[in-house]
Amino acid sequence: MLPNLAAEIAALPRLRVSELRIKFADVFGEPTPSHNKVWLVKRIAWRLQAKAEGDLSERARRRAAELIADADMRLSAPPADGTATQEPPTILRVPGNDRLPRPGTILTRRYKGRTLQVEVLEHGFSFEGKAYRSLSAVAKAVTGSHCSGHFFFGLTQKGEKP
Picture (cartoon, rainbow, N blue to C red):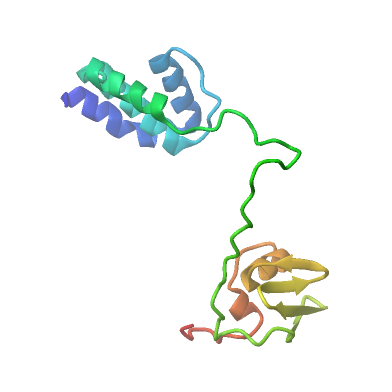
């Protein structure tokens, strides 16, 4: 890799997203709707290398086109009338969690002047009429930020390993 090219690519992560978008338009000749910094850095680095050291060979391009043509891809949606054969949905069985009380247990906690009650279900939790997959999801709904549901509801003490 050329020294100037390596330095230019190494500098990309230090640019702001607005600067990367300008660089993208300069390198690709068209603007991008993306604001994802990591994606922009990767795409710009790839394009700079391709321009400096050469793009894919014609043989590689033909092989990629063959693979695309052979792809088993659905081009239309299945019939809406249900005539297509449907397999029953697979039910994912999650093993029980020894850290949780049995289904039907009500976990109670006071938080900011409110009494919170969460029911432990067979596969999840119920809080204020809504189902949640985890205690952490309930804790996030209550507090607005991520925290350990087990710790929030007093099932794990601070510093205790699960």
